[in-house]
Each structure stands twice: as structure tokens, then as C-alpha cells.
Image (cartoon, rainbow, N blue to C red; front, side, top):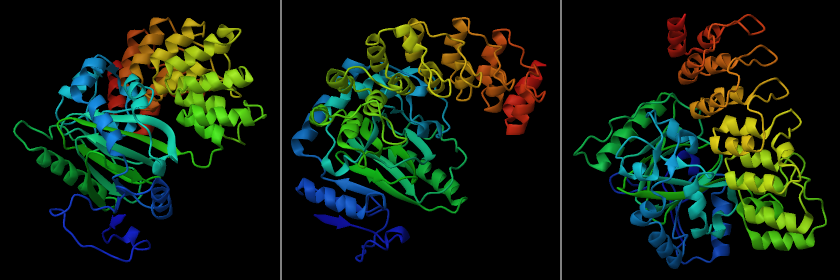
Length: 488
């Protein structure tokens, strides 16, 4: 095993040796851990002891040669286009880092993504059909199996695609095709969205495009007193980030594919961990040994039912029902919140009264459809409404699904609900209308859709007599203010 490291303040406690370099001579300013040919247990020990939860690191040689050959064959561009090119990609399918690139986005397809050059980032969340279809081709190496709470997510795209500076829980991303430039820094508050449009004009080298992007991000980060390090991840490299490390990326290849996971599962019991990761063998062994009631979670954590639904693992749900019958807790809520249509359909089909299950509430009076609407999952909403969930159903605070989506700006979901004659005038117990919510969070397209449905955008239904305009002004949304004043 060989480690390369460079002298940066946050690595000083961990390394004695220092190798100096410059950006022009090396591809990574982060620590690099070489694991080619290293025993799996040794790799787990070294990664966990030195880096896990402490420092970003580029892991090399983590995957066996046969595994990598299989991925290169199955995920080759012609095969992806032939089998999955038709799949639609919508804004709610994307990781939030893509939104922080400041590049406008409309509904497209996998084929459309691979035709683009520059600008837009496409990091598909785990509910999307493409990562769901590819997940069985990929087995997480033991060294990073402790980070698998949410995923797999799939980064895919053409040359020059960027993700703006953002941070989140610990994660790793394994590069399969192409190369990705990473900009990584110590945790600090999220920054204003720089706009990276027109980075790659025709004729420009990819390295020039990504260098422009890097300089722009570094300049913005410096305003917050942050210093970013550059690192290029190539095929078979895995980049690991601990919680809350800020990062931005730019695609350097003409065809880029990477797969990864978020969140810690290492502290979960075997059955819970297997429910998250879809490990049927471990789940079967754990179920054969347990006599505990499976609808119970661990304190405030989720039960195995809920974790399997959260991850969309129908195989685990089948096992749970075989061993202990249907329990589930709020499993349907979690499947819907994550956009897992197949899991939601499975859960509804195996209840004695699917219509009642579709309208079941949690302790706050919240139905599964509220969570689905907030996350922008129109396909799941269609399943719920097909089982007689009510489009205007209110939660314990009087808020409808349209209120929940208005905070996130999911126009396609609002249009779907309005098409079902959902009440666009509805207000919660505080008199907060859907228009109030959309104005407060700065979503002009939602306000336009409400206006076209004859909703009065000037109505002071709020308990304090406030209009949507007042909330927009208070929140600093000048574009919403101007739109609403133009409507008066």
C-alpha cells in the first residue's frame, strides 16, 4: 500500500511525510490512498483509521480488474443509449448540487443529456430508473460499505458539465467513464450561486472550460475565506468526502459516468443495514435469528420495513413479509418520499385496504402524498391517487399537497394536481395559501400557474392580513415582487 499526501493544514495531524508539488505536475491536491492488490480487511482498516469522517481522500485500485471490465462493458455509451436513452429526466430527479450551477434546466432524456456539451450537471437521485437499472451491476467494495444510506446516485453527462459549490453528508463517488475535476474545501456556509453558462464555447479545450469554472468557484469561495483544493478523478478512482465538506465538479471527458452513495450505515444493526443496502443474504440470516417485532425502530430511527421502502428494495420487503407478515410502520410514506414507484405499488397491493393505506397519516396528520409532492414525485402521486388518495387532503396543520410542493417549486406536480381539480385557493390553519407559500419561497412559475387557474394572488387570507406580495418582499425575492405588482 502506498499513500501520497501533500502539505495542507487539515492533514497535518495525520501525516509526517510531505511531498511538494504544483498543479501542473500532479492531478490531485488531496491525499491519495493506493489500494491496488491490498487485502480487503487491510483496506477497510486503513481507510477507517486514517480518513473515514476525518479527511477527503482519492482511493485508487479499490476495484478488482474483472469488476471494472464488467462495468466498462455494461455501461458503455452505445449500450446506455440503446437501452435507456428514452428515459425522461426532470428537475426533481437531480441532486441539489446541480441546481447550484445556476444553469437553467428543462425536462430532457438520457439521450438528450449525452448530446449536451457544457453547463448542465446531471446527478440522478436513486429513485430514477437509470440508477435503479444499473445498481445490480455494481457491488460496493468493503472499505466503503459503511457509506450506503442513500443511493445509488448516478452522475452522467457530456463534456464540461458542472455542479456548483455545495455540501452534504459524507459520501463517495466512483468514476467509471471519463474524468471529473473536483474542487474541495473545509466546511463553510453555502455560497451564492455563480452562473456558469457559456463555459464551453465551440473550439475550446475541455481543460480550458473546467479551468474557467475552477477559477470562478475559487474566486467566489475566497470571498468566504475558503481555500479549495483541486483533484482529478479518473476511471476506477473513488473520491470520498466526510460530512459537510464543500465541493464543486466539472466533467473533463466526452462521456462521463460515476456512481456513488451518501450517508453512514455502519452503526446500524445487521438487519437494518441489509434493508438499506438490499443485501438479501444478510437480511435472511438476520431474520432467521430475530424474534423482535420488525415494525419497531431503534429509538428515533427507522424500522427495517421503512429502510427497505426508503431504498426501494422490494426483495427485502418480500423477505420481511415472508418471515413476519405485513407490518411496515410508515413504509409507504418513505417509499413515496423517495420516489420509488415500484415499492409504493408493492406496499399498496399487499394491504387489505389499499385505499385506506393510501390515505394513512403519521403522527402529524401527514399523508404519503404530502411527502411525495414535496419531493416532486408526480409518478408516485399518480399511484396514490389511483388508490383513492384525495388531491386536497390536508395535514394536521391544514396544508394540502399543493402547499407542500409550493415550498420546493415543483411546477409539474402543481399542474398535475390542478388538472385533477385540486383547490388552488386552499389555505392552512394560519391562513397561508398556496400562493403565499410560493411567493415566500420565490417560485414565480407556480404563481403564474395559479393565476391561470383563476387564483387571486392578491388575497390577504393570512392570519396577519399579509398578502403574497408582503411575504415575497420580506424574503427578498425581487423577481416575485415585480411579478405580483405587475399582476395588480
